[in-house]
Image (cartoon, rainbow, N blue to C red):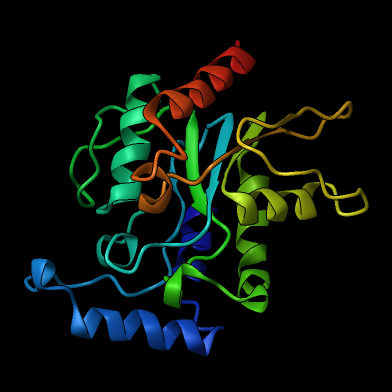
Length: 220
């Protein structure tokens, strides 16, 4: 089932704007990556298929996941995320540079609300909706899922729309935690580990470590 889903994701061309952008980035490249053969396709989820925690980001970075083909791999956001996951015992190593670098995840699965790198890191609402079935299917396949860590406001709101479509939107703030009384997964909000947040001090290593410590506490 995972293989079939990933094939569908990788082959998707539903959003002409995103197809054009991801492929243009791959042609033009950055000087630092001129020798790379960019992935330039939608990026499937990555992690432990038996995970109890789903991590949801916004979208692949133009020269990160769009280059390497793996979620949060090859850019500063991934550097910040995987170091925190390693420190918390969810990742086998603190770095993520390319597919085949030895990185393995335990008890977490990483995905995004949009699977293609968008211009300006801003996917359109209809583009997110086009990707929504993939996120829904990943949630269905994660049969041991207990909770979701949403990285950023858009991911946080999109997860709510999926899990709580008839409820009022819960407010976003870093560290906000919502545990429903029913069997639905809990939701934990975090600032996105983008360079804009980490270099300005809006999201510090200590703040991010606190998120993963809370995840550990919830998992028992």
